[in-house]
Length: 175
Image (cartoon, rainbow, N blue to C red):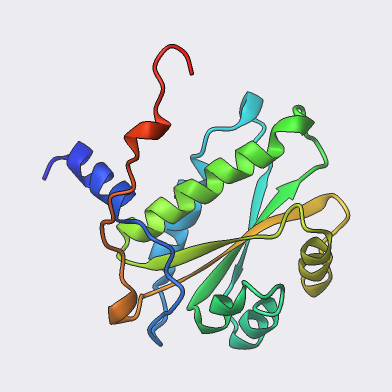
């Protein structure tokens, strides 16, 4: 398989994985995920991202209480909390796009490592922002954007291809 086919396979096979095997993820794989996230495009190269890696079981369980949708964090091998540093933003209206690109890069790298993950929004929900900020004692200039729970998927919850292409959503030249 050539490099382009491998990239296409990762994109097509990535799914939201919410159940994980009880197995730690190697530190090299976590670093690869962080490196991929930091390679994301960013408005004016402002790169507002910072990351909090959570592996401690007690902290994962606390983070799982962020919202009704964050329960998968409790069973994850690790969670990646995506943070935006607002201290020196040059393009304040674009930080969410920057963070979304970093999240997508992280998710694709996770899938390429034969891991599973699910993205859970923090921003712009005020109660979630407060919960994560308080839980990790974040300074005022650091805004939590999202949480990605990750780990080795349980056998019945692995990444696999589902064709989601819908031709009727594609328009050429005009709507």
